[in-house]
Amino acid sequence: MKSPLWSNIFKNWNSQESEKVTALKHVPVFDGLSDKELDEIEKLTHERTYQSGEHVFKNKAPSEGMFIIISGSVEIYLENAGDKNILAELNDRDFFGEIALLDTKPRSAGAIATTPSTLLGFFRPDLLSLMERNPALSSKILTNLGAVLAERLRKTNELLPKSDN
Amino acid sequence: MDKQKNYIQLIYRLMVGLLSIGFLYVIWPYISSVLLMLVFAFLFTTVLLSSVDILERKIRNRGLSVLVVTVGLIAAISIFVGSFATNLADQAGGFSQRLETESFMDDFNNFIDKTKAKLPDFAKGGGEDVDAASKLNEVVGNVMSTLLTFAGALGSFIFNMIMVIIFTIILLLNYHQFKKSLVGFIPNKYFEVGLRLIYNIEQQVSNYLRGQLLAATSVAIMSIIGLYILNFFGANLTLVIFIGIIAGLANLIPLVGPFIGMLIAFAVALMNNLGNEAAQAHMLFNAIPSPFYILDVALMFIIVQQVDNNFITPLLVGESVGLHPIMVMIALLIGGTLIGPMGMLFAVPAAGIIKVIGHEISFVTKNAHLL
Image (cartoon, rainbow over the protein chains, first blue to last red):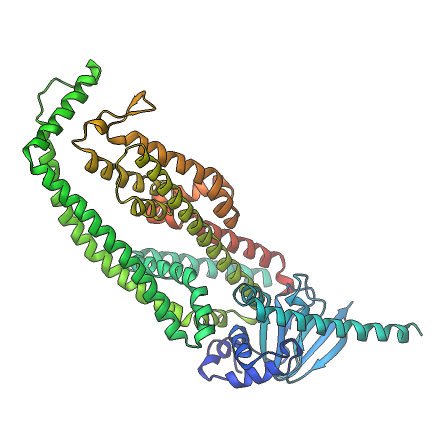
């Protein structure tokens, strides 16, 4: 079996820069960023590999950032008294956990890899250091992040009357 | 059964831990100097990293950015050290020429006699008639032999500095890759906590360094202003800007540092004013004898230190590491006892890092079920 520890240590031996940038381009949080800016973001991201069934994070775990799926699939779930409620099944180019870029509250759901997966992590410490070094770029990301969350809220609002009925 | 397995695991981990500590103790003498070089390189990297990153964003070439920043810094340091050494050598040359003249020796003997005459009887010593000028010659001879020993130490210092510069360049070139490789070792389970730990350590170190550099700059500026004020009252001090900058930089070493600038100022005051009747007879506040303005210089540096210790450093540095003043003192004492002035230099940031690591370990222990 391929160990995630070793694959994480030696992943840089086979550089996949263009693949990472392509994945970043598909994420609305990085909309409108130039290639140069995407290169800078790519340097801040961390590629991680997960085995099938391995937790990316558990519900209520400390949260530090968002993940983008380069390959594989991830299940977002909530567990209530032993019952597992699957909220979403995410695949290539999907992203999750973006709220953690804004606050330090624990995760509101769990995420588990359902197939061997390669994820790209973008974390709050890196965003904070980017804010110090390149405020213009980080403000673009924060505006996009605000737009993503506003869209989520709008959709939730639209669902509310339906659930009331 | 599970409990027994846990105990075996605990004993195993304890043994591995003890063996590692023992191994480290044995190899420490061989690796300590290299580790110290790496620590210095890391500190220089932390200071220079943002400049390199900003330049790289503009010229799109990491290697060139590192080259420009490091060469710029080395050039600035070389110009400073070079011109300081030249000025000091000129001053020392002039001083030694004056030492050789007979009248100067007489001046010096007269000064010693006058000082002795002013002293109360109990402080005059055993009444031995000492030829102060020949004593001074002996001291100069001792200084020359010390200088030769110093030249040897300087060679070793230059070698260490070159190694630190090489390490710094390598770290600056590959800092982000090194950091990513380090992060790569963190298991998925502890990944986010590990990232937060690394970020907090970086913040601790860079906040501390930023605070220290600002404090050093303010000490340098205050010392320069103070020395100019003393010159206004006739202290006849030269190399004022150099003394100020050295006082500021030496201030980075807690407790011992502040005296370094003062000692250089004493030397300059002595060299410039020896033979000057007015300076020899100078009284601080027209009340306390202060030959060569020595007490004036000391008072000025004490005032600068008090302003720095009570207002500037607590404001710029104290808050950055978030340590109680008693903890800072204990850290300084431990660092000083372990590795001397170097230990004092690194004691406070090291204590800050240990505090961050302790905080994260406690967090992980409490929230292990969530990871």
